[in-house]
Image (cartoon, rainbow, N blue to C red):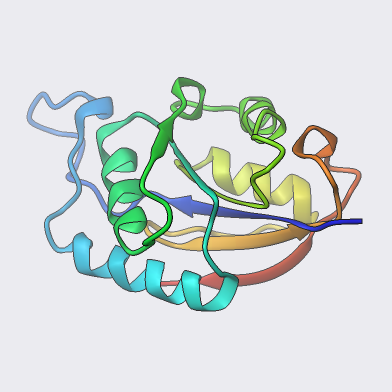
Length: 161
């Protein structure tokens, strides 16, 4: 039995939803770049190099994913998934189950409350993901299509800015 790894990364702090800026278009606060760079370095050290980085297409999430991926030499591409914006837990499960079989480790960049709700289904306990925080899971499956809440993952670590 192989192990797959999944990291859930909440987007970094974004500008407030004010001044007529649509939620989807909200930018990261400029001070967040160094924080996400540090988070990425700590994640790489703890969990290794991801094979794939997925993100919500919302500006703040995609920018977080780009900053994270910039620290990863081998991973350049970020795949944007529309269903990760305003996602429900079913949407996240669907995205995870559709990951390419050859990807042993995936990073998913998204939003709350859906990431916390998804983590709750996996862990059966409440966790709080603040902006820029990530949590990693190891799951004993051979293929992502076998991913389910009945296969309780091994919770590895929560990395905070």
